[in-house]
Length: 386
Image 1 (cartoon, rainbow, N blue to C red):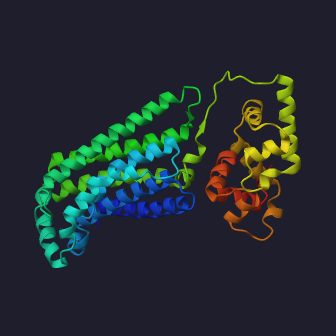
Image 2: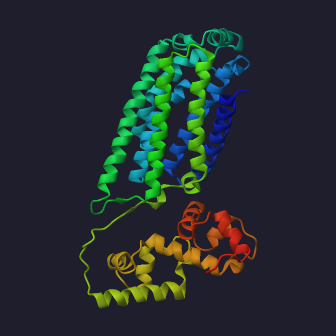
Image 3: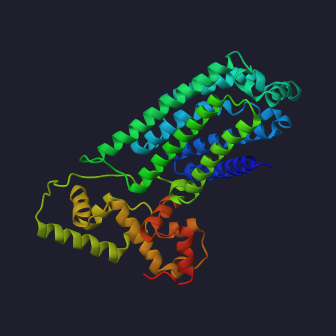
């Protein structure tokens, strides 16, 4: 068993598991970016898995896997672009028109459908030709469209969407300097840039593979080793960032102009701040799931617009961040009381007012610097000082 096979197989296995994790935690929250990320990881994993079978020779025993990776090659470019766009724009629903981005992949699937429906014995003739002469991969026919045109379409699609993706990230980075712009933290930018860089390196590896013409199994082995290594590094990075696995988009906020007009004087602002803090600390409204800015405005007898200014400018926080911080700190000081019935993590989150497990995970990580598992463990052993 070669090093390339081991790395590629492990990377694809981790990827399939990660795609399940991402989709599972996104499905209840209707998080479009996370569902797209799940599709990206799954597509890369499947391509790598099929490639592993190809260069290892196992494809001879599993001929039905042959060429199944091709449609995914046309799924990844638009999905990556849509992931970045929906992340920046905080989209909660997938637009119907966005399905047009996947038309080339669907047409390729239809083109290869007759080949997919062939018997195992019929497919083995294609597999045998590939194993004996790997350089013929670009010329093997499996549908109406010539193979070289398929690979050309994949290359054009990859280049076009990668350009659009980089352009969007660059424009957003510049736009964050403007008033009322999106506030993206450094970790989010690192993640999006790492994702884009990984995709770019994979495309460069593919270009290298075609330049080498993959005339020998050794050259295919080298290409697979590079691609498998890149994806393995990407998966390790992803597993070390649980907030990326579960939900990235919740931390995006909008900044206000630094010199925004305040419709009351400093003494009034101070009085409002004290009123808000007294109410929150005394009444603990944050323990109510779904407690909104509107609810707090009614309870403190401060208009909603004024309250927003009080929290943003007077307390230097965003409403959701403020409430979630109180929830986490309450859990830190009342853990035994909250978890007297040995609740699950979802149950604990619900007890202190969190509507979703995803928000709880992100808030704990942001406020304490610990993963939720580490956080709960330290609370159980009284190692976390409040």
